[in-house]
Image 1 (cartoon, rainbow, N blue to C red):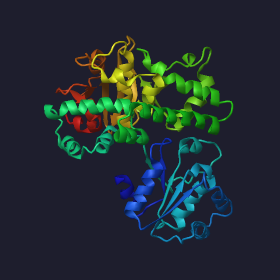
Image 2 (image 1 turned 180 degrees about the vertical axis):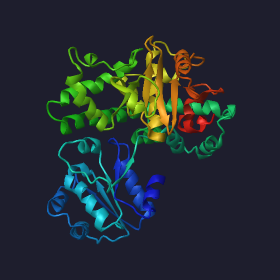
Image 3 (image 1 turned 90 degrees about the horizontal axis):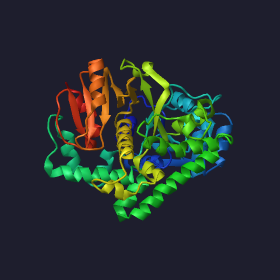
Image 4 (image 1 turned 135 degrees about the vertical axis):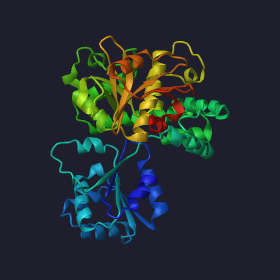
Amino acid sequence: MQDLLKWKNKAHRKPLLLKGPRQCGKTHLLRAFAEAYFSDAAYFNFEHQRPLVERFEEDLDVERLITELGIFRKKPITKETLIILDEIQFCPRALTSLKYFAEYLPDQPIACAGSLLGIFLAQEGFSFPVGKVEFLSLYPLSFKEFLLAHQEKDLLEYLEKLSPHEKVSSLFEARLKNYVKTYHITGGMPEAVDHWLQHQDLEGLELILQHILDSYEFDFSKHARLHDFPKISLLWKSIPEQLARENKKFIYGDVKKGFRAKDLESSLQWLIDAGLAYKVIKIAKPGIPLSAYGDSTYFKLYLLDVGLLRIMSGLPASAILEENPKNFTEFKGALAENFVLNEMIASFGIKAYYWKSQNNAEVDFVVQFEDQIVPVEVKSDQNAKARSLGEYRKKFQTPVAMIISRENVHGAEVKHVPWYLTWKLKDYLCR
């Protein structure tokens, strides 16, 4: 909401495109934004209001479009009206029209949203209005937003003011750890979090999460090419199994016996473009930019949300709630890594990599904050040693390194960050 308000108040504002996976709250957010900050809003949905598509099939004269859209909704559109174009991927010409709105009606506020925009924009042959559109990305609720949803505004303000040299007060530590456990159970999908807040009902929560997963599978069959659908589905379902291994490197042959990279590359890219999976590539060494040192043949694959990962893996909530559950070791680490990755992406919009040595030392994530390369080791257990991080630091003489764990401790060159403060990683970069 704060980012949307910044967009509204810009002197030279362009049409806005809000990206994000299905059911993460894009439509709800735009409607709430319009209600809070505009005197009028005109909402159009290209999936449910198919006649709208025809209005854009003619010429893209923006004055005509404004007039006809006003007639369609039975109320004129003015410069004080926020136009919301939802599910815009169903009307490619509407996306193209944004160029002309930017050039000829720059004062007309327009915000667009779409669930599979990443896939659509990646298609060949589509002329996108480059430089004429602003982008924002929406993700499932981060842990910080999860605290806000639980009416923990005062606690959050305390955490925001907390110096990286201070430990979290023991008065709040147990409460925060419990919230992390709850977040691992619910995840950050808005409907799931809202249901938990209202009912504290585990059975209902799991039905909602399963319904979201089912809707994603439906998208595979509806929007992917017919011959890609089975491969996308198999690949999607294999992610929890591959994360459960001690070596989390993604292996195409584990999706289905005999499959190789060339069989699944386009299906994998579909999931990534849809915002449903994140690809974390191996790097040879920590140089700037990190992308120049990536080896895309070695990678790990994570999901967009830990709650969905829990349901897909068949992990019961009780395994998370218990302090020392049996038979829950490797996957506990996978869940923790997925949580940290989701937090870093939602909080900082960064791309994460990982590092592995020839003798199998592995650092979970390596990220770039401006000119700083930071190795990040994630620990799911207390008092877990970070041998791989030590080898990385010795090899590359890195000035700053992070361990994210359950512990609320301090370090000098190695910064110890509790899980519940992952969104404050930048604050720990001071040397």
